[in-house]
Image (cartoon, rainbow, N blue to C red; front, side, top):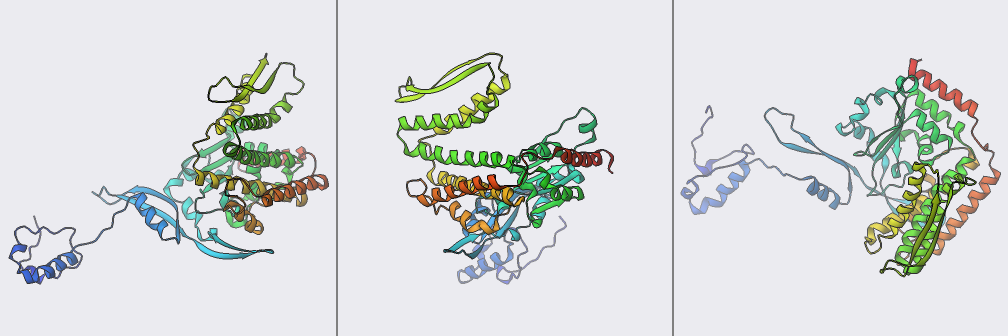
Amino acid sequence: MDVPVVHMKAEAMGFKKEFDAVWACASLLHVPGTQQKNVLVLIGEALRHFTDYTEQSLGGLLNSMGIFKVMNRWITDDVRINKDQKWINVIIKKIVKIVIQSDESRYDLLWERVENMDFRALMNTTEYDFLRTNERLGDRIMLLGLGGSYAYGTNNEGSDIDFRGVTLMLPSDLLGLTEFEQYEDDKTDTVIYGFNKLVKLLLECNPNTCEMLGLDEEQYLIKSKLGQELVDNSGLFLSKRAIKSFGGYADAQLRRLQNAIARDALPQTDREKHILKSVMNALDDFNRRYAGKENGSIRLYIDRAENPKLDTEIFVDADYKHFPLRDYTNLWGTMRTVVRDYDKIGKRNKKKDDNHLNKHAMHLIRLFMMAIDILEKGEIRTHRKDDLPILLAIRRGDYMLTDGTFSTEFYEMLEEYEYKLDEAAVRTVLPDNPDMEKVEAFVEHINRYAVTGE
């Protein structure tokens, strides 16, 4: 080997971080005892130091410091020649403690400053390469922005990063035989709707899609010229349908709260009654849709249990003829989901479930806030910066009692927002339905561009 050799006493070593390892073979025994410690120090100084981490140990170190939050992490291969090491890549953000003053009390909040998180840098990592390489995305994306808690401003240390967007249809979707509704990447919690699918959802004032048009400017990661036109024309899609859509989502959040509380607090017999009520609520839209059809009937009721582990249970009598199979499957799927949630009793992780309950309670109030804005002001306001004190107080559990139920103050607040929504529904100047002639003209304008580029 063409490697230089240095002949010297161990005590004379002066190397500084030059070696990965030192092999002392039958040599240190020649060093006088009085010099052994000094030589070992010199050997230590000659070694390079590497602190190796796993994803878990590095995340634990950063989280234990209390000033950083790990936003994302991933593994990459070494790009150097003849190197097969793996590298951990980590995106972290600083947690800043601030004080928010409300009219009635001080809120000492640990609020993570979203502006300190570089979402664009995250979007440009290899994990999000699909945004650039997928034929339906790339420069066809009209809008891409924050979703979920980061969009509302209610994020905490456990919040996921969600991106939501809309992309142009391909010419073959509009003129040929291909079909496209949405692109989903489960690994990054990214959902990008096809433009036509988005329009259909917006026409129903679907809350998840309305939110995309009400972000603050800095919350958009991609906004093309056509994307700006979509935001500017958001009023085309607003109508009194928001009463039912936002109210329906709020009702679903409330049912989740009621279900979880009932699951933990009620005797088994009463719990079965509550399950029945929840099932009937969940079927309400279904029953309205098929009202007046003479193709059968369904009846749910409580009777003495056949299951030896229960006192009472729900029974069903059903008789349908010539009933659409897909609708029949949806019907049973809805009931199965409700009952399955109740059957999780005894398997509850209290801390985790309490966090979820507080989150449901917060979103319940947030949905009312957004619906009232739409009906009273004709505007979509997703980022609830003026409402953060109350929303974050709900999320951190200020309105939850020690037994897992919610305080009287929370239900009084809920009742107040229900009243405000009812009042806004009466006073709103929004039309009963969108102006379809204007909507169709806008959709034609966007889709013409998707085909011709003009």
